[in-house]
Image (cartoon, rainbow over the protein chains, first blue to last red):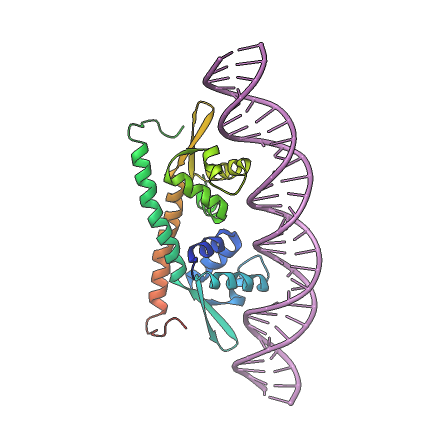
Length: 106
Length: 106
DNA sequence: GCTTACCGTAAGCTATGGCTAACGGATTTG
DNA sequence: CAAATCCGTTAGCCATAGCTTACGGTAAGC
């Protein structure tokens, strides 16, 4: 997981894949159940889950013939880390260069 | 800016566009200067800046014949908001379902 | 052992997105 | 007014990514 952040943000950028992720985040679920609530086929969901797993965003646990997917906090942590470091820098820049700026929302 | 988050994460998912954004974040700069530090043409940078602007991630200010681009905090705020709300939910789920879980990193 | 349920993978198609090259508009400078 | 600078937009090309269909593999149940 060298460039975990790039993988994570790339994974969550796709709307369908993000829907899969948000569905898994609500409650762990098997692949078929996830696919049932989405407008794509089950193999498509499998592919999305593979990408999410490689990005450290979900985990799987085998249970009989089913694979239960759940959230993996590491992916979200990578996102948060990037955003946090960025947030500070952005605000610092903003404060430095917008000292006497009073015009807003053009 | 109804679905600002979707636009923002989609904009930052592309590596080149993210490089443009990070470059702008360091210090406001005109288009030509940004393009000079990247392996793509100037029109490409212009297109990326357009996407970033529509996502609420950058702002422009005209200065003579040049357009100075700077960070717009609203895009980052949308990202942070989504991530924060998500973080709480994800941790809650994680705690609820991983009560007696002791196995880690398989 | 055979069937059924559940799932991952491979192949193939299509749409989308990012890039370059060429053009045109706006502003400053002589 | 003419030339130059800086930039946005368009058209077109090509690689990539997501979807479906078909297949194979594993675990439970009869």
